[in-house]
Amino acid sequence: APHLATASPLTFPPTFRWGAATAAYQIEGAANEGGRTASIWDTFSRTPGKVRNGDTGDIAADHYHRMREDVALMAELGLTDYRFSVSWPRIQPTGRGPANQKGLDFYRALVDELHAHHIRPVLTLYHWDLPQELEDAGGWPERDTAQRFADYTALVAEALGDRVRTWTTLNEPWCAAFLGYAEGVHAPGRTEPEAALRAAHHLNLAHGLAVGVLRDLVHPSSEVSLTLNLAAVRPLTDGPADRDAARRIDALANRIFLDPVFRGHYAQDLRADTGLLTDWSFVRDGDLEITSRPIDALGINYYTPTVVAAGSHPVPSPWPAAPAHARFLQAPGPRTAMDWPVDAGGLYELLTRLRDELPDTPLIVTENGAAYDDYTDPEGEVHDPERIAYLRSHLKAVHRAMAEGADVRGYFLWSLLDNFEWAYGYSKRFGMVHVDFASQRRTPKNSARWYADVAAHGRLPGVNCDQPGLA
Ligand code: GBH
Image 1: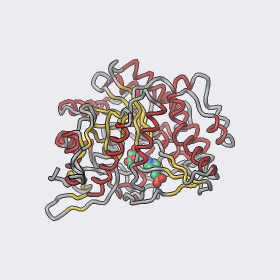
Image 2: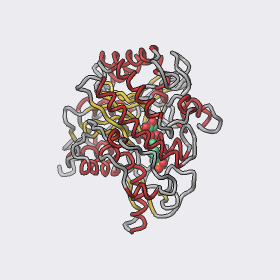
Image 3: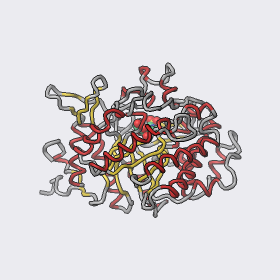
Image 4: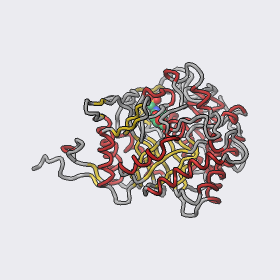
């Protein structure tokens, strides 16, 4: 029949990695256990007015105490890979000095448990939890923080370099620099645009230093990568003013990381656009050789496109020097519980752009997913049909980009579990597994069953059989 939509399921290569992602502060809890001390997120979340409902990561999803149960759940769902982050203040409570053995023990046990279930650990060294003592010394705008990160990387690499083969230095340095130091909606909550630009450079430097440390210390077959939340920037119209606004945002969102890492420079237009804020003298001789040390893959986190027009938007803003030149609009169409438009085309645009600009760099979607309110029926089944639709459309976009030559090696759903959604606390649920934060009971949502089926067969079921149980 010509309209049989189920006729050609979208198949992925047998080597494709099917994962889920989390981050230490968002799931672990046990904030004061095992020798851990405060990170900037502990301080920020304990500051009234910073996080919705006054939520903190003190308990979170209690993963620190439920790690084995959570790994068993991953195995039950058939994940091939698990992306997690290491908590810097668990490993190095003051951000300096020797390793805290209890911190290393937790991650070694996690990695061993993953291997016992044939799940590949994908380790991120930094997902935003800077030790508070380093922020007290100036934080990421301070050059020394990059060196501190290199030292911390060596402690983790020495302890786990024999058993982890996939390493990511930083998660989303854009958020760490610009949400943390310019807009102030993330920890440490500073609103200093010039400091944010310095933070961005020092994060790039930290990345490059860590690449060098990892190459020296971890198993030579290891893969070293960086994860960026690249913006799929679209000008509102084709007119020159809107296109120029989009160029500025592309520079501040994307090229400020892609250029130093893959091309060893910062673009002239970026330097010119930010020229009133800084002279870029924080970039020292030799830095760009360090930031551009070769890496093996690029991780991309994608949620929603960025639509830009000429105009201005309010400060504080995450866009240093751009508030007077760019305003932001929502893409049309349905929104998630974050109010973020659902638009899988942005993921396709990013992947095909990177295919063209970085033809020799394998790509991994290290985060994609959506927050939705779910519904538990009287039988206890957790329904989240919008999440299934979101995942399906974005995986179709990945498949299409791959069919057109993008070298995408894997996909990680954000997130395994409902968790501490930063400034939104526990009010937004990104998990494919529901967490009852009173009892800490885990219940896979229908999306988890759907995703397990996709992972098991390496293909998207046809649109006529996407109901769980019918695939
Ligand atoms: C990721 O950040 C994080 O890595 C992860 O920890 C987090 O839980 C997850 O996403 C969900 O938030 O401002 O409306 O134009 C993503 C952060 C999300 C920042 C999209 C830029 C643009 C939407 N990015 N956001 S909007």
